[in-house]
Image 1 (spheres, one colour):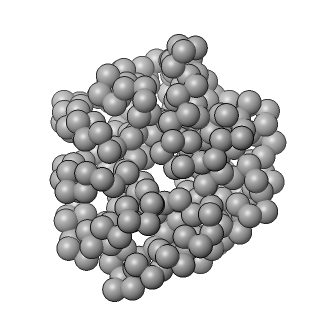
Image 2 (image 1 turned 120 degrees about the horizontal axis):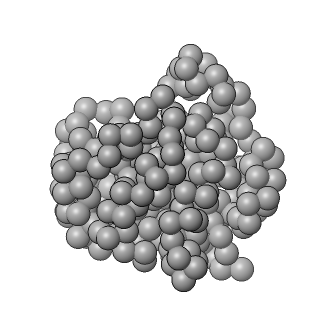
Length: 274
């Protein structure tokens, strides 16, 4: 089963989705399951993981409803206020829906010390007992905090989104490379091959631009802890779905692709195999 491990849905609202600024006219509209289903089918994908794009419990409920109505959505990574006093109860309530598999917070928009906050870590501690994953969304400069976090919770399943958003057009720098090696030493951490095309200068790129990054993440994480994600529809700012998929499919061998294109996501998110 081929799984796109990272994509989004939204009903566009200028206030809620203020991060979609004037330069992003391409994605300033609704993107719903009906828009994605044919795209997945045309590209040989069997399902996807829907990931939160805004910070509200309403977002989580919206994604869970999308999943209930569209069986190709195999898992939901929602949002919950991990710093809330009642986080255990909130997670338990969301977990009543079998589609709820994990949580993400947009840490890239927070101060660099956010993941060190005791309240945030108390929330992280509530995930593993309920069998939930955590998606790490950070910029490259925030990787040291992520490394400290995953070391504190060795039983918690983490996945790094978008390879920590390095500047692709500049090539891998020493700091990003070393921090990725340190992060990958923690075997409870996976990495998504996602969000790369929009980390290019003016959203212009050639396929070879991604090769050194893919080489490093493959060397450090190994093909057992990598998973393909399109970051659709955000990817449309820089590439059509087919081109995003081609970057990953062309890099890996036929023997490696089943892991990267689905098996690892199925194992990480606990997706039932059909």
